[in-house]
Amino acid sequence: MARLLLIEDDPAIRTTLLRALRDRGHAVAAAAAAMEGLQTALAERPDLIVLDLGLPDLDGRELLRMLRAVSRIPVIVATARDEETEMVRLLDAGADDYVVKPFTAAQLDARVRAVLRRGGGGGAEAAPVLEVGGLRIDPAARTVTLDGTGVELTPREFDLLHHLALRAGQVVTKRELLSEVWQVPYGGADKTVDVHLSWLRRKLGETAQEPRYLHTVRGVGVKLSEPA
Ligand code: CA
Image (cartoon, rainbow, N blue to C red; front, side, top):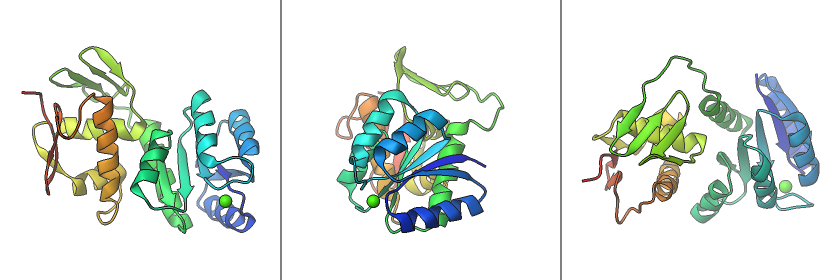
């Protein structure tokens, strides 16, 4: 069971999701507007927030920025627009994942569980520290350093990098990344992998055109390897 906060102004959607998420065993609080949602988030510290972008008092993206300034509570954004630029903007603004409207409660619940699994650090066994060139990935502490300097990653970016590091030197397919890192089947969502890879690249200070660690193998997948 997780404690969720649903910020959604549409009463019909709110009621439906509230009921469906509770039926799936979550404790769910709801807010119908952005500022009310922010106050509830800070007061109640839910495990995860589901945020509708179209809110009456404040744009959801703005709320996300305000929230990220003070909190790392995972956020899944509900957006009406299925566009890559919009996705990148949302992920950049600190969203952990997104669902595109219209979505089912089952889809949302799957995303909620996946985000919480990533953030929760459930498996307590001490996983070994991985080193690839100047990259050092510590799965127990969930920290990454590059040439001794800390790199700030979101939970998903960390899992992506960790998975690639486990297979360092090998090409990992998007299909594998989707099933192992995102826990979703292949098909349609592979843009998600590209978006997260581009973000990871930026944080590692490299580009797809001039890769150091992350090498795209066109039509196959991606490989993490020590810079030449
Ligand atoms: Ca709305």
